[in-house]
Image 1 (cartoon, rainbow over the protein chains, first blue to last red):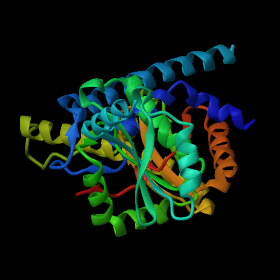
Image 2: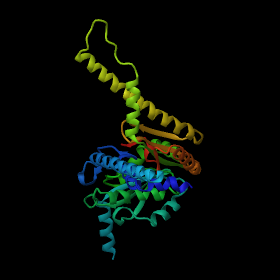
Image 3: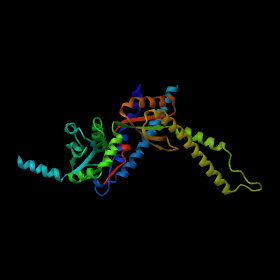
Image 4: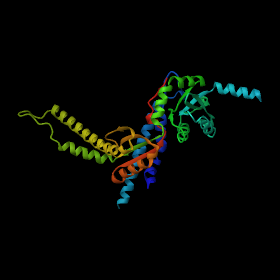
Length: 72
Length: 263
């Protein structure tokens, strides 16, 4: 029974991981940090968020279709 | 053979240090060593600890030029914290930050020791869960618009004709009411969730949005032994509200509940 709730979240797990690992957690202050590949991680984070929303939209549509199919 | 070892030591010393997590290691240094020996960092790098007092930073040597900023490396990075959190209280680090030497890491741990300990105590024996609520935004939009339109509009003063200013104000008032009804709806959903979760006594972070499908992005920090109860509550919420989706993820290391910048 519990698996139902967890299963629904499986599809977005990778995006959730990336959202956390790129945007959250302990931060090093700028003057001691060596940024990886000199890439702006904040920008990456924003892109990620956008793709997360798209995924959510897709999930929502899939869910709506599944609900409709159930109804008939 | 000896020369090879010396060369390796020099190379390692010259490499950058990726920090994955800061772990409460007070009584468990042997355990931590044993766990780290079985794990790998990014690009298969060897994990080891740099300790100060009761805390240890889990690090690996890696050249920053070899670390591509991509999903695969970020997931490898996250996997280290995910594995360690099974046995240790820890603070996960944000991906993409490296330090030049072990000496600097030790200084960092020493300088921020009390703050790190406080954060570790806050998250000790707890797990983070994420909850997103996704609604049929078009339906809620339509309902909120209907409610906004049902309220009285600006009255025209006697003897005054309609004007573009009045039309402008009416439109703005309608938009304002529309947003108010959206917020009211989102707040009702949040209240429902928080009331039901209150018995778990969670620490919570809740972001709310209006006019979009993903109206709530929340994180809850609960005692690990309350996990089944949390899942049960979310399941009840989902079963009761067929029009929405409740996406629960976790358990996660406490990414959303570390309030610390290491200086």
